[in-house]
Length: 399
Image (cartoon, rainbow, N blue to C red; front, side, top):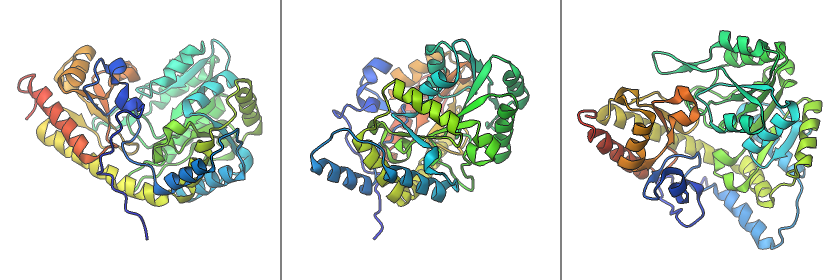
């Protein structure tokens, strides 16, 4: 019998060392906030994953482990079934996390002073790790159209990729925070331009399993051999199955030279050894997680609809563009005419909800807020009611 997952169940995470719930004082100045910020879900992981982890715990020995064929087989099966991407074992490597993998790639494939292209407003650790490693951020800002959707400025992108000092590009696909699922023609243009100008692509596809409606995620490296040989892809079960704390990501590249160089740098930094529970959870999730993902997507779509309807009816001064992917919604608050600090105060101090401030994602994110809707509906409703009251307190700015 197929298990029915209860995503409305409230699971108390206080006291579990949860970054999302227990580190608010340092991040937002108070612990008295409802958290909708960091991209982790307030849902239990799938039953097959929990059962596999229990069995591993019962074994009682947690020594050093290595990635055997079962790990690669699970990854290959998942991406063949879910994304029509046919992988080979020799294309697959490991990282303790996607950001860790990106950091290693920056050090493996670029030199100090080189430029790396990103597309803001974008996941803010991208710019941080580029600068921390003494490389230079080269921005190709996304353009927001009248319907709220973001598009790529390809003329500007080509200008940036032509620069001899540009050596790499970090692609976010699906895009965080603007929730775009890139179309095939967009991905082909990116891949072909980077190949033309000798710019390697680090493709962060960690949100690939969250795509809504008739859209589908297209792995960049699946488009052609030429693009595949110029791309290193980063994925992980951590978002889809709520496993971020198990520190396991998957690195994929068809190009043996690129993967060998990555693995060499992984070894140099002594982070090649996997977490024993991460291996078990990844294998179980990618082998038995399809039904969970299906039910999860259905629930997230109802949360998206709930938030969109609530804001359009109760806080119409805010604008929401329906996300194409991810469980992150990008809220346009510019009509409030508040500074970044004032907008932060509205959300963090008046509404008492912790979200990711738009300006964290780059200057083009000013006036926006990112909200994580991967939580029980009752918690989402409570947060939206608090936001409604906070906006109303500004005078004449809500319903």
